Length: 171
Image 1: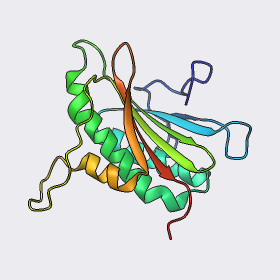
Image 2 (image 1 turned 45 degrees about the vertical axis):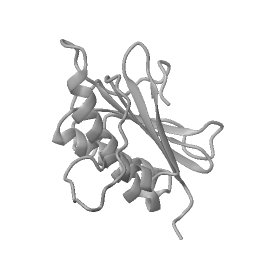
Image 3 (image 1 turned 180 degrees about the horizontal axis):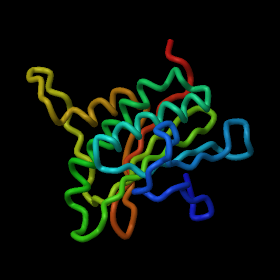
């Protein structure tokens, strides 16, 4: 994932000059001497969700992983939605909440991450198909699409929720 030696290209509030220019940093493409990765700072808005989806599709296209685009976009959308709904409201008062989206590629997996300022653990509620709920299915969808998923605390505050998708084509 990005490090201080590899900062993002723009600050979170800075807008791109053209809509197709995304404010993110990309790192070596597959075949380099280290895994490929990309990062985006996401605004807590409808525009932020759209940028997260475009960023994910553009990155996967650059990595020749278009076949994983639909699943990856759905997982990212669910993780960002959860961060906005649950973590951002619990962020420390007076601080500007920040959500960071990351994609990392290794030879067999695509790892999707969403980092947010909330300290609470994600709550997985197994889907109850007897009632079609409007909310509460996000992690169920992530669980269904990912080979594995989890979360890690990010001291001094916040957490990162991650999901791993296989890079192989669906059969």
